[in-house]
Length: 207
Image (cartoon, rainbow, N blue to C red; front, side, top):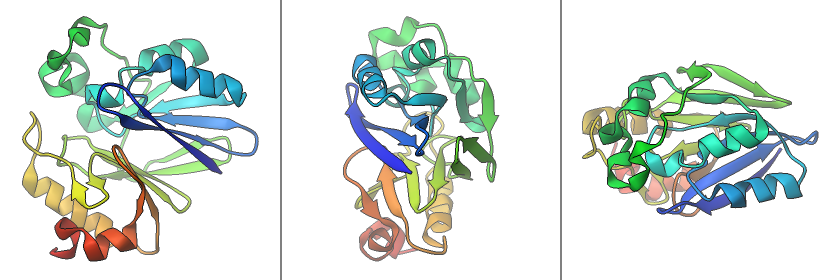
């Protein structure tokens, strides 16, 4: 498996391209700059099989429709965030002129413990509500894509519509108890490791 990180969009969210040796690809959180994402896909001759969101906030999905249109790939989103697709106050699209965009339509609603197959990639859904009701992480091999649940040294905000501090705390506790070591690939900022966050992130080390 290879993973390419592309900071995109107005808030520089991390879009991840995960692909196997056959170039079967999952695009996670295409938050903007569709041309840049598609250029990388075409340059590497990737075969996009699915577009996935960790949660439904605009900065993680602004380019999803264009990536879908260009590749024909289905859109998979967390079940708990389906309502946000048609509610700009919950997707935070009300902050942007793009709030009038046609709502995305998911092809699959993913839930906790679902196993998603993209070529030889096997992604496990880990429900981590708190930042949004449906926030989730994707575990693939030794990589943990955490969206806006867990960052290097920090965690996601809970003061947006649908946020819940108590639920986020429970989700962080769940992540801290995962067995093994993982490279944490967050929705914003640099990569880290789960061991590093267990010991040094105050939100996890105090659990």
